[in-house]
Length: 346
Picture (cartoon, rainbow, N blue to C red):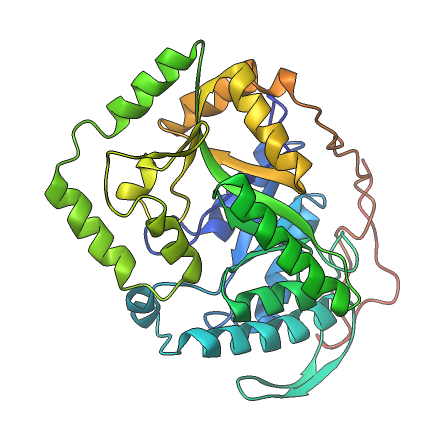
């Protein structure tokens, strides 16, 4: 919050703390930081997710961003009660977003689809951001690209080489234009930035120095069971081998040997990492979701060494606290929005 980051991605899944609870705990402790929190089509009702979204957007003063997560691990999905095929999950996501966005816009929704049936779906208390908080989404399959083009504000990709990312951007942008929409683009990367390039590469090597081949093999078996096209693309970058991990200048795939999802890191000194970020920016990336090991130390190091070199243009949140925020007064019979919401004053 103090360093100047735009926001923080709060991950989702059984290996993570619940992102909604964490964001709710952090919102009153921060002033500017936005929270990218996941909705899970198939796990949540779209109207319930809309109420959660509106509430957290209000109590955070309009600092909520929404990450739409379809889920790419069938084993984990079944553990959460989701027994859907890859393409069925995207069908659910499309229907979910149709309902979710309409409710957040203030519409009364009646919907009868393949996966959802809604009657008189309404939201009594609106979000701060209109028509809804920005929607982020990643999906490398044809089904995922179609959902992104039709429904999403910011399309996310994992950290592939710039040429591959440029091709993905061109494809999704073309689909969005055919749908009469515009989509912006973001990328998910790790960073290993040090005072010198030699120090950075030494720390990259050190990060995986105690991984034995059996551990890598077992991790790759887990990734292979997934039906995520994005995960398949990440795994192909290194093929489970540790001998050719610099897959593009300063782009290192070592993390992906044992970590699913984001498996590449920008490695180098501050000027080098800033140059690589600029390379992605030139092909159309305007948002960078970064992490490192250890995470807190890397966040401070990147903030001190690299942020001053970047042409940041994100605004500091100065949203007034009297916009669409509670207290709202009593609803009428618990069924109608108060006729004259009372905005809080500060």
